[in-house]
Length: 241
Image 1: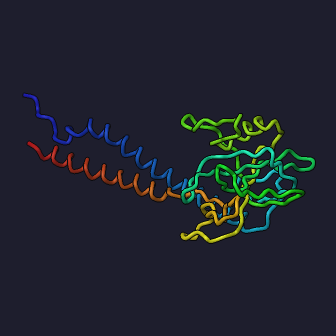
Image 2: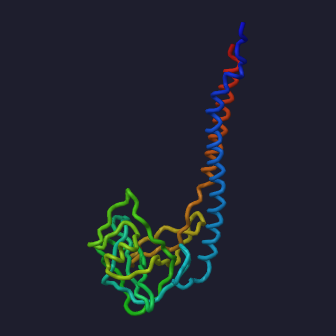
Image 3: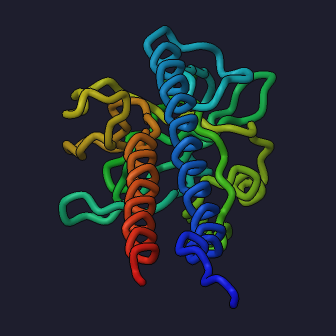
């Protein structure tokens, strides 16, 4: 007469299915902890770079504090994105800055109304400072740009340069005018509110968010819940006659 199978054998196969899920959740939690450390170091580097004086816009790191001098080509303005301020629809004004011995630099001067009423356009040699803005690649779901109308929804520098017929640098400069600190004490700020003078530039440097601690807690919490649920199920499975 054959012996009935041991009760613990009932959970062998389910265990082989449950353990990979647990390992995956733990691995994702550990990865988020590593990402948190990397992002914290990046934020510290950005804070140090942006707290110092601006450097020449020759070959800057992304979001570095930079400055450049040249002459604005106001006849070649572009509009980027869209944003409503109050009851007025507007966009970011992009103006090429022609520099001696270097490609033109696309400068994001700040928010303007779509009709560009009241926009100031300084003549002669000017010096602007802000942060290095990297180029963007349009995604599959990105709004379509209109190069012929010089209306863009992505900071696609090659496409902008082609629309202007102008050799441009591979990065841009977003003007920053010091203003109010962010309520949360972070580095970045939202664009300055339009107070009558346009363009209305940013008042602080951007700062990438660092949500990885929350993600890590989520994955470790899911792993703990998965373990508890499986342990409860396994104990009942084993104790069942």
